[in-house]
Length: 154
Image 1 (cartoon, rainbow, N blue to C red):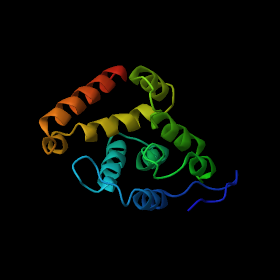
Image 2: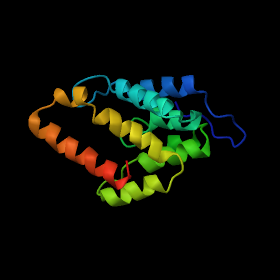
Image 3: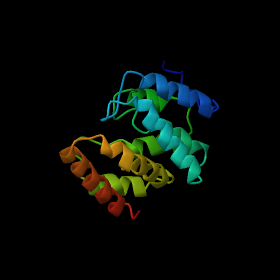
């Protein structure tokens, strides 16, 4: 699944990025047991609805790929994606033990990343998605998402 790296390669078209993300996350589900690709699609659609460009939409499809071990950092480094898309994916990839403030600062310092994270948080905090979770998890996640929105100035 690893494409050969070449500096003169055109970035993958969005349809190919979507197909790749769907395949990479095919066996994963979200906290409610839904196919994880539904979340990726919602974030990509949220980026598009917020005026995001193709590089941001590609990053939306891939935003959890390295963090969730669906794809590797080596794959991302060599992938036929724009440098900006790769930077956004890296900015959105949480580092174990990283404080939320540092994560937010990295997102804010990466052009285009804040919009993708905004769409991600909007879908994660959707009341219908949260409603199927137990009260403890719902309360924890609601507070977590609100804190990140505040750190990002959303």
